[in-house]
Amino acid sequence: MKRLAVILAPLWLAACVTPPPPPPLPAPEPTPTPEPVVYVEHLPSEVDAVLAYGARVRNLTAAELARELAALAGEPSGPDTTLKRALVLSRMHGNGELARAIGLLDALGKSTEEVAAPFKPLAAVLQAQFNERRKLEDQADRLAQQVKDEQRRADEANAKVEALKKIESTLPARPSAPATK
Figure 1 (cartoon, rainbow, N blue to C red):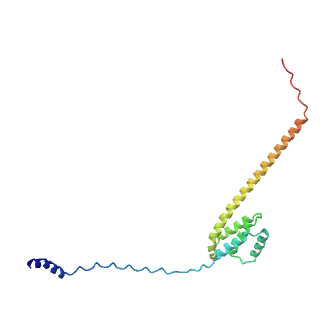
Figure 2: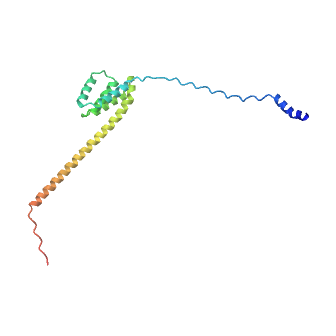
Figure 3: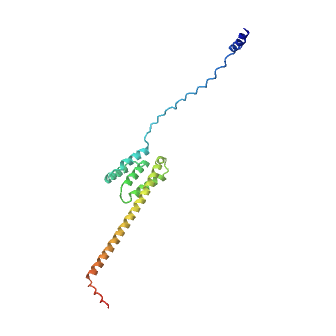
C-alpha cells in the first residue's frame, strides 16, 4: 500500500495544481474603414469648350472656315474667342493667316487679365506648335524654290547641249588625216 501511496501521491498533488492560463488571444485588428467615395462631376470648363471647338473646325473646308471666322467676329471679345480665332486662322492656308494666329496667341499669353489665366497654357502650347509649323512651311518653301532653280538650270543645260548638237550637225565633215608611212 505504501507503494501505492508513493505512486498516487504525485498524481494527487498534480491534480491540485491549477492549470496554466491559456495564452492571451491576439488583439483583433481593427477593421479598416473604407475611404468614403467622393463622386466629382466633371463640368466642362471654358478650355474644354475651346478644345472641342478646335476638334470641330479641324475638318472644315476653306469656305466653312471663312464663315466661321466671320461668325467669330460677331462674338464678344474674350480669351476663348481669341483662341477660337487662332484655331480657325491656323486652318486657313492664306497668306499670313498662320502669322496672324501666332500674333493672337502671343497677345493672349502676355495678357494680364485674370479671365485669361486658364487659357494661357493652351495658348502657349498652340503658339509653340504654330511656330514650328511656320518654320517647317518656310523650309518647305525654300526647298521647293531650290528644286525649281535646279530644274531651271537643268533645262538651260539641256537646251545648250541641244544647241551644240545642232551646231555640230551643221558643220561639214572633218577630212580624215592622211595616212603616214
